Image (cartoon, rainbow, N blue to C red):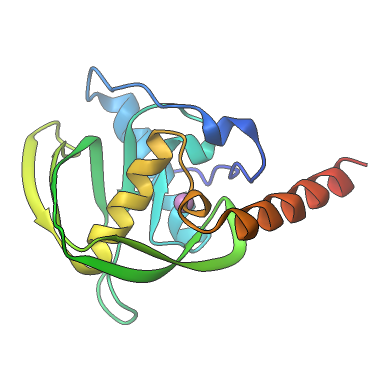
Length: 171
Ligand code: NI
């Protein structure tokens, strides 16, 4: 397993839509393992393949609480079939937007269809932190970031800050 460099805002790669995965093979499983390793190292609770520069529809999540055993989960070609009208608010962050957090409101429960690490189709209802995390990561597959769900003023401030930081790093 390899820790991969993370793609950071405002890299345009983050705005790219990811392509569906056609075959769950050894290469894809290695990518999933690399993503998990990268996520745990960061540390974070979710990561989409595009965040390490791979535009494929796969994400990894582990929402285990501190002190609990690891619960790595791999979601391939995830698709939200149904979203609840009930909504919940979580303070979100993103490994591609380090050290920035903001409250985001999303549907509280989602019904999800996906392929697991073995390529088997699963349909599950997710709620709580997992529901929020899944929606955040699926957004990544469509080139959407959590800052797209906050006010325009706040979003522009964040993008400006990260654009400035990227420029000073390039010099
Ligand atoms: Ni993110």
